[in-house]
Length: 219
Image (cartoon, rainbow, N blue to C red):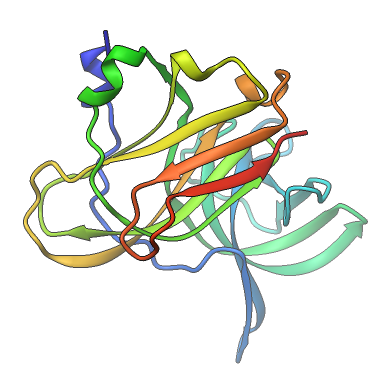
């Protein structure tokens, strides 16, 4: 059975995010970037790691000023920043301009007989990309007033073979028509990434394209 608490633990997607991921822009303040990063805490204070592409090595970003945001080790957030100093090839100091919470979760396994019980409402997919242990998505939901829910799942009966088949499931929660709101999600797939899979197949019930499947290499 699908555990009922999974439904209740869906993250409420209430507000649009303000920034565009994976882009650099130049304005009167100079070049700045926005990307989904992983938070790290410890003796060095809050700092971040991220990959520009799936094949790129991880870079570490150190804020020039302390950040008081209460974030946990390993959390994924949307970071807007300006580079300040290159410490070495994969480490740099940055000026943090904004730090925004996003929907962060792990891949969940669902029994085959319970798959049809999960919602599969449409959304507007803008981009999907994989970086290391994470599958990241940028999308829009038609939001009015009720919290929506997002979950990344895999059918337990499909775990054999060389392709890890995952599905993005969206619930509108009977939310009336409203306005399109930009959202980001990042899912940790590390528990399955290093198994004998060679390919990640992603299903998204999107409204903007006829196709619903995307494929990524697993290494």
